[in-house]
Structures are given as C-alpha cells and as structure tokens.
Image (tube, rainbow, N blue to C red; front, side, top):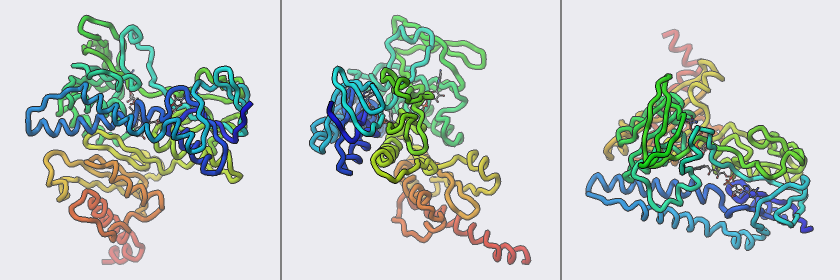
Length: 462
Ligand SMILES: Cc1cc2nc3c(=O)[nH]c(=O)nc-3n(C[C@H](O)[C@H](O)[C@H](O)COP(=O)(O)OP(=O)(O)OC[C@H]3O[C@@H](n4cnc5c(N)ncnc54)[C@H](O)[C@@H]3O)c2cc1C
Ligand SMILES: NC(=O)c1ccc[n+]([C@@H]2O[C@H](COP(=O)([O-])OP(=O)(O)OC[C@H]3O[C@@H](n4cnc5c(N)ncnc54)[C@H](O)[C@@H]3O)[C@@H](O)[C@H]2O)c1
C-alpha cells in the first residue's frame, strides 16, 4: 500500500492550498480528485462567472455609444478560454512537478487512514477532506422533468437562451442575471425572501435590485417557486406570493438556490466522521475522526474561495505541526461582482447593535459627493461604516465601482486592530474612490476627539 504524510481529497481552492502548504513543509502528499484539478472556482464558479461579468460590462458600456450585435456563443467561448488559461497553473502535471502525487478518481474511506480509489488503497498519517459543494436542487414539483441549468452546466452552453427564469437572488443569481441581461437575455428572477441578497445590509440590497430593474430585469421577490412544467416554448413556472398563484414563462431556468456539501459516497459514517449538513469540525477544523480534517465548502460556514484557502492552510498546519491553531471568523469579508459591486467586512448594523447596543457609531458616505465618482455618469454608490465608540471598525459595507478593491483597505485596518481615525492622516492619491475612506476617517477622528472625557467635560461646562 502506498504511504503518504498527507492525503488531500479534492483539488479545489481548499485542497490545493492544503497540498501546497504540506509540500512547503517538505511532506509527501497524495491528491485525489474525481473530476478536474482546480475545482468549482476554476470550472463553474468564480473564474467563468467573472469572465462573463467582464465581457457583459464591456458590451453594456459599448451599447451606450453604438449599435452592438452580441454573439453569445463567442462570449461563452471566451469564458472557457479564460478558464483554460487559469487551469494551466493547476493541472495534474503542475501539481506533480511541485512534488505531489495526483490520482484521478472518487475517494472512499476504508478507515480514517486508508482511502480507496477504484481498486487501489492509499494510506496516510493525516487526511484532509476538501470535496466542496454542489448546487442544491430542491424538490420543486416538475423540476426534474425539465432540462434546467445550474452553475455546473451553465458555462458549457453553446449560446445563451433568449429568455430565462433565475431561481434565487443570492450571489450566483444576481451576478449571472445582470450579465445575461446585459448580453441580451430576457431575465426574470424569483426570490422567496422579501429582498434580494439577504446577507447584505437591506438598504444596499434594495439599491442593487432597483439598479438591475432599471437595466431591464424583472424581479419577483417574496415569491416562492412551487411547480415547473415543460411547454413548446420552454418552461412554465408556477409561483406563489402572499397566497396568490401565478405563472411565469421562459425558454429555460437557472437554479441558484444555495449549496449542498459533497459528502455522499465516501463512507464517512462508517469511519466515525459525523455530518450535520456539512462535515462537523472543531475549532481547529478536525472532524470527529482523529487525524482527519475538513476545509472549504464541505465544512462551511462561509462558502467562498478565500475562506477555503484560509481554512485549507489552518487545517493543514493543524494536521502536520505540533502547534494547533483555531479558525477565527471575526474578520470575514466578501464581495459580490454585480455592477456596482457589493463588498462587506464584518458585521451589519443590526448585528452590531445586537452585540453592542447603542455603543456603536454608524457613518454613511454618499459617493455622489466624491470628485472621482462625479467624473463618471450614473449611480455612484455609498459606504456604511460601523465602529465602536472608540473608532474601531465593527463592520463595513460598500456598494460602488471597485467596492471589492476598496474593502481591502478597511479589512486591513479592521483585521490589524488599527483605529479607523488613523486613516485620516494617510495620504490618498486624488482623485480616487479610496479617498472616500480617508474622508470618513476624518469624521471618525473628530468624533474620537469629541468623545474624550476632557473634551466632553469642557463642552458640558461651556
Ligand atoms: C457561480 C459561482 C461563482 C462564485 N464566485 C465566487 C467569487 O467570486 N468569490 C469567492 O470567493 N467564491 C466564489 N464562489 C464560491 C467558490 O467557488 C467556492 O467557495 C470554492 O470553490 C470552494 O472551494 P472548495 O475547495 O471547498 O471546493 P471545490 O472547489 O468544489 O473543490 C472540491 C473538489 O473536490 C472534488 N471531489 C468531490 N468529491 C470527491 C471525492 N469523493 N473524491 C475525490 N474528489 C472529490 C471535486 O471534483 C472538486 O474538484 C462561487 C461559486 C459559484 C458556484
Ligand atoms: N462573489 C462571490 O463571492 C460569490 C459569487 C457566487 C457565489 N458565491 C458563493 O456561492 C454560494 C452559493 O450561491 P447561491 O446564489 O446559490 O446561494 P445563496 O445562498 O447566496 O442564495 C440562494 C437564494 O435562493 C433563495 N431561495 C432558496 N429557495 C428558494 C425557493 N424555493 N424559491 C425562491 N428562492 C429561493 C434564498 O432565499 C437565497 O436568496 C454563496 O453562498 C456564496 O458563498 C460567492
């Protein structure tokens, strides 16, 4: 039986980070992958979706100035070419050149140290499960009898449909809906929550829904999908809102209703690896079987590539090194790549008030007053910054051009525990979007001064 220091199951964001971390420690590593190295992010997630978003944005801008004919077959070909380019850095050959052994196939646990692939069994002192997640497809009557799309087959289409119903207005639903609409597809979105993007600040979610509505997308919020039928033209979706039933029609349907962890067919129960929807892990990412760790989407709770990387590193260090580290989710951040982008670091205002009551300060900034934003037509977005009474960041929310980049500055300050007021003394180039953060910092600086006991006393006695 071939022996390794570490077996990594899955070669997506979490698995690749685990494998490279272990190789960096000079360990022998076996990677088992049932599909293609790179995982969802490369093949059906971050990379192709951002490839589509970028092309859709260029075409949308071009359409403002000229008649543009869109060939969606060409757009999708380009998306796949972008994907191939990224894959070149994570092929089995690249992984083997870095020192890993790569085996293609479905991994099945025989014991917590022995993993079978086909008719061969491999053994390791430690095992990392990084098998990711798959689209969750609920039992909506009739759905299984129509040819529906998910992120797994979406980017394999030869061309985009003329019309589509998108089920779910979360990250996938919103990013793909806007892109498709900009590429000429008639898009109808059905979301059961009262607002789109339910994880975000509600007023920001409303802004993005209104923007996409103005671009031509039809939203049905607070609406549940209850049945699907095939028709000559495509599909007929039955929906229910406040007890009222109606139907929507389109050529096809995209299911973007959340994710299910990939835990099936691995014999996890038999070797003592407990699951509770995701794989159950402790604060060091160890599963209920000693020496077996889990990271990325299969462990949750944040289903994001950068969180898979973060967890992959911690799980591997805990598996291979004597010092144990705990995961810390206090500084989670993410961005959604609609136009304008959404970005978030830390708590919402409601979450901050739940934890700290009125001991929070909330700063609002409107990009309409920023010179750089004014040089461009259209909506300019806003920032909401939540700090404690000392000026330390509890949460930040940005909806604007380049929000995903802007949040990095707040995220650095927040993670390093620097008072936000200190940013007021940092020279920011003019005219930039980031200068908005310096302007907010100026206000935080003033409020910090006004909050000093001596200043309060002086003002009281005045
Ligand atoms: C459309 C879309 C857009 C996204 N955009 C973003 C974004 O912009 N930013 C962001 O941070 N996140 C984004 N995500 C989320 C991101 O893709 C995931 O969080 C990330 O890919 C999770 O990485 P992972 O390594 O846990 O799992 P995966 O990347 O899914 O990798 C798991 C691997 O394990 C393999 N596997 C599964 N079972 C077995 C088995 N039994 N044996 C062997 N191999 C197995 C799979 O084939 C797969 O290759 C997006 C997701 C989608 C769907
Ligand atoms: N930019 C990014 O970072 C990015 C982009 C895409 C995806 N992702 C990741 O992928 C994950 C999955 O994305 P997703 O969009 O599938 O899930 P999601 O959880 O973000 O959104 C699913 C949406 O579907 C709605 N829904 C569920 N059942 C419904 C029903 N029967 N009828 C109508 N609406 C229903 C939910 O209320 C929710 O709003 C996200 O959680 C995110 O972590 C990240």
